[in-house]
Length: 115
Length: 132
Ligand code: HEM
Ligand code: HEM
Image (cartoon, rainbow over all chains, first blue to last red; front, top):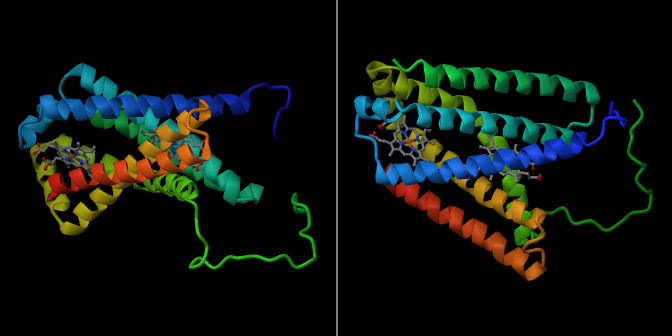
């Protein structure tokens, strides 16, 4: 149920959708620039080394988290529009939410398990 | 549960749901494509993470990722993901501009929609050339 006493709930979802979108645009542009000025050497070693710098991994993780939270807000919005049965919508939301939560943890693992 | 929506009036109203004769205005096309591309990217996210993981974990898994990605169908999927991302991003930036009250006049709205389609198409083409 919507808690009318808690102000600005919808606004913050709206604002976060935009903040995460801008984060992704900035990362995408920086990534494209890096590919042009500092292309990875072909093969596993070059690709692996490309991900070694802490700053690049940190930015990539921030990007993936922004992406995942953005997708969560977007998916909720879409479900709200098309699934009117509250019970089914709640179940779908939990499933998608768990998947995205798993993605978020997995992203840390991928980027921080590099030997 | 009772429907929260008001009952539709009994009176017959003219409707046109024939997909072949509806002329969808370009801004509407860009808008629905933004939604479809967002949902598509959401569904493919685990696959993308899997590929990223395989390509980085160790030399053997890198080989696997490379073998999988060299399949033409995998390349097509990569291209579809790339297009979805670029379209969604361009349309998203346009959306943010509209939120900030830039480009609201109809002729601008049409022009920027067309620009979204063209720019994301060209960038995808560029990626496709690189993929093949
Ligand atoms: C903006 C989009 C993308 C850009 C600019 C990009 C660019 C690149 C570049 C320059 C490499 C290095 C190639 C090498 O080291 O030999 C690479 C490797 C790779 N990319 Fe992408 N890529 C993009 C999207 C994707 C997508 C959508 C996928 C998967 C669906 C993907 C999967 C891979 C994999 C697995 C590798 C390592 C394997 C290999 O080197 O052949 N990339 N990418
Ligand atoms: C540079 C990257 C991106 C930008 C600039 C961007 C921008 C936006 C914006 C502004 C909205 C809000 C639209 C509205 O309020 O109606 C939105 C919605 C959405 N985005 Fe993104 N986005 C990006 C990447 C992504 C990615 C990678 C995904 C999925 C994994 C995604 C999934 C969604 C979904 C599902 C929605 C809801 C669509 C709807 O309500 O119709 N977005 N995006």
